[in-house]
Amino acid sequence: MTTGGRHSIAIGVLDGTLALDVAVAIQAFGPRPTAFLAMRDELESPYEVQVCGGDQARLRTLGLAFRDVQPWSRLAAADTVVIPGLDEPDRRRDPEALAAVAAAARRGARMAALCTGAFVLGFAGVLDGRRVTTHWALADRFRALFPDAKLMDDELFIDDGDILSSGGMLAAADLCLHIIRQDHGQSYANDVARLLVSPPFRTGGQAQYRAGGAPRASGSLAALLDWVDAHLHESLTLPLLAAKAHVSSRTLSRRFEAETGRGAVQWIRERRIDRARALLEDTDLSVTDVAFRTGFGSLGAFRRQFARATGTTPRSYRLTFREG
Image (cartoon, rainbow, N blue to C red; front, side, top):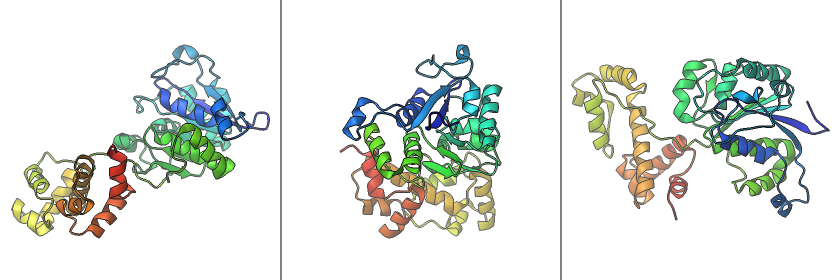
């Protein structure tokens, strides 16, 4: 539903919605504050923004309450639907809200989920076969609830045509700027980014900054994995680990898959990346020293594997997580 020639955006607010996600969406798409005049001689937004939430008596977000809330029927008729993140995302929400989200998707509305808002799209039944992301820490719960969705939990945001989604809370700004860039061009999106004091462009392929990539085992491999952690700087091969565990390489491979969900080589690589992240964050070691202390063998191999796992370089990662 285009209102007055402007593209309509409905922000769906449910019980437990996170206030910061709502604020980011309103700031990105809603009326421009006077500070915007420093960039452009205009304050009217190109979007008609409305907050939808049905029965106001049941509506309270984490951090603030809303009063001027439109009915779910307005969301069902919007051109773009934005679902902010919410607490306890694996709890099924108001059936009326889910029905409105599903109706909007059937109409061909553009659907944008911010962080855990992807769970709402999942419960509304619009994610089967679609590429989507959400916060990395909730990936296992998401996969269990929505096995037919193609979750890519390493990415900041995913653009899958009429279904868009972002990872952690602050990646919501990246997704909103991506939508504005699509609709109104790079120059206008850059000015909105300046208003938000946000980087104008972080690619959707950049990885979320997740922690603890390699799962720990508490079964028969626990002692061996503790030994591996203490020897990550050494050359670690499957035959060597099998000898330490007094089993065949084939048996060890089966145990790794069963207890960690990873092959041995993948598990070791993820532990080395985890250790490298810690050293980059907490020490002044050079990138070369970090490479050799984590067993990558060469600076080139370390840079390639680190970029593949995080979407950024070791130096950029350190600058992100170190003050000064």
